[in-house]
Length: 223
Image 1 (cartoon, rainbow, N blue to C red):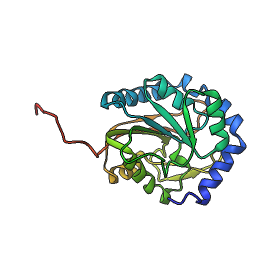
Image 2: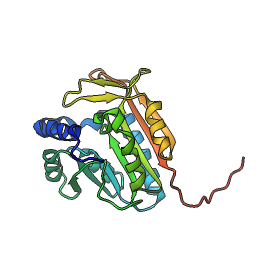
Image 3: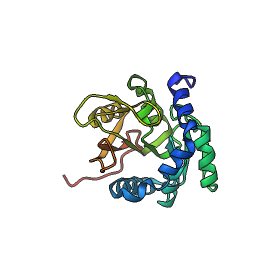
Image 4: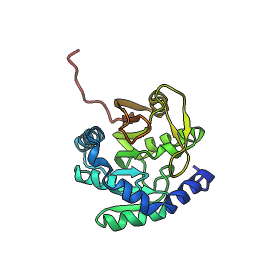
């Protein structure tokens, strides 16, 4: 992954420029989103049940979601391209670890993570550039680790660029994102589509996937 890619620099610069405003907007955003909280809770329960491994939030912004994962019982840390947002995250949540970095190149060992949350962070990646990110997600997740994606869904259309308020972003068909993950041996566990609230423009998509890098199976079936 080329860390000097122009879209990475542009995304970091754009969020740096509005960091305080964005943080004020994001801090309490989950309070009115019970469905979003529900799928995050399912993600956390599955990760906890799979064993005590750390969880990364990719594109953590001001750290509110990383803190939410911690409150759900996970050993969570966050990374983000924007130094300004990481500064805010560290000030708001001094008990958590936050690092400046790209989700295309995690500074963790192969298979180190039990879970990975990408909450509206893949939306800024140009579609042709996205597949290597799923390969990196697969690399860092341990056997049976879980990946949860949050994104803007294209409502039956193709991948669409739109005028995100910070920097250009893309709406994805949920099946297309699931296919990209499947090519990296992720297995779909669940999906959720949420219609926009009155002050939201687009349908929200959520994909919960499990890494196909599972340890030797130890299951039985009554089928």
